[in-house]
Amino acid sequence: MPAIRTQGLVRRFGMLTAVDGVSIEVRQGEIFGLIGPNGAGKSTVIKILTTLLPPTSGQAWVAGFDVVTQAPLVRRRIGYVPQLLSADGTLTAYENLLLSAQLYHVPPRERERRIRDALGTIGLSDAAKTPVSHFSGGMVRSLEIAESTLHEPAVLFADEPTVGLDPVAHQAVWEHIRELQQRFGMMILVTTHDMEEADRQCDRVAVMHHGRVVIVGSPASLKAHVSPTASLNDAFLHFTGATLKQGGSYRELLRTRRTAHRLS
Amino acid sequence: MSSYAPAVPPTVSPEPPAALTYVRDVAAVAGAEIRKLRHDPLELLTRAVQPILWLVVFGQVMARLRGVPTGGLPYLDFMAPGILAQSVLFIAIFYGIATIWDRDLGILQKLLVSPAARSALALGKALSSGVRALSQVVIVYLVAVLMHIHVHFQLANIAGVLALVVMGSALFSMFSVVIACIVRTRERFMGIGQILTMPLFFASNAIYPLSLMPAWLRALAAINPLSYQVDGLRTLMVVGGTSAFGLGMDFAVSLVGIAVFVALAAKLYPRMAA
View: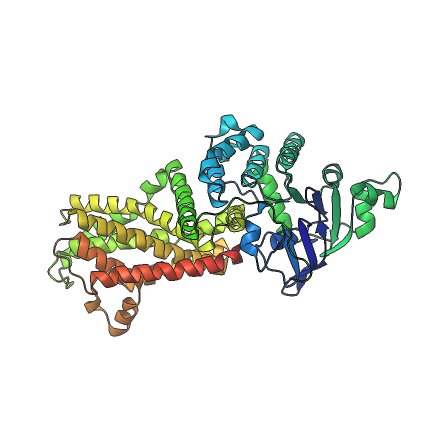
């Protein structure tokens, strides 16, 4: 059974078609990248798959369940790290983790142990009682990833998890993602417009452009398709023909910048 | 469902009974909100200013008029429960801004992706708003005692006042969340919040009785949940206070109001995340 499967997924906002017939299939245990410029439709796909947004047409299944008709069953099996910073700055790290454990219905007997383990994994055991507003960007992101995996989800969605992070934090966040993945064997879907990151971290990537998936494959196969020495960025430009003028509204830029600003 | 049927879904720990889960979810959300309050207690102090001004300045001046038919109550006694209800309303009516913040920060999205029922999320927020409002009870009672207002101190009366205040705050905070979900931006929300507070206040029995109102205003006041809040508080809080609607009605209106607005908020929450 694939961890994620979509069939002709379409989402329109008024005149704009943000997602235009996306069909993908992702295997269990895979780290799958959705790459593309701002405005390509990546976040909208994630919102549909996490049941935040119903598709205009088409179907999608996550962990075996239909995201529209079986949304509550899907929600029990997924974790979600939004592009925005979702950890509550006015609560401590422990309190953030506790709320997630409660709302994701981690059995009360296991809560404390799992929170302790999670804090250990992300190296924040000493900062458990510190309000998150005092954390660095990398710490916040790591905390969010821990929060979204306390219930050991089958699928983790991470929307631009490293945007705005410095290289050290960037690497730490990925180490945490990988460690959790090895422990729970979950499938991870990340969106990014950082081609180097996608190349290094993803088993396979889907290149999105104007709401469509242009090509799916391993970073190596995509690069090889273009030339023996091509980078994934070259491959990306080859498949999308993207230029600076395309992609990304003012509003999205503002939002990304704001997230980046809060992280730094 | 086409040809794709789930084979063996990955193991998920079994869920306890739905009702228990629901109560736990409500408690989890309310608990987190109350913890936030503990981190920032200064907020509570700033909220003391408005009711004090109304009682000490407006109340004392109006009390000299002796023109308001209060049913035998001194005017300050008549007005104190109205100011308590008003101060709860004025805080709760802006609660929706927190929902917009949560959306902008990504916190709301995180909650909405969780398996918790959306109405449980809304009810938890409503309850936490109710608990926050309890500080207003302390302030208004303190001021009332200092101003020699004749306050009931029987346990049952105080319990009733606390319950009504929690319910009133829950009701108006969810009304506010519903508006936030509809207008979706901070700027529009603040405008509408300003527009709503004064009509809700003046079209109620908070500072003058229904009998003084022209018929059209009395009709509005009769469908204003704030009137029932004030009526219940006036009955329970001050010596000699009488109920125009009946205490049962006062509580019933609050409960039905909460149910309606929690249901609406739960329905509209996903609009915020889209």
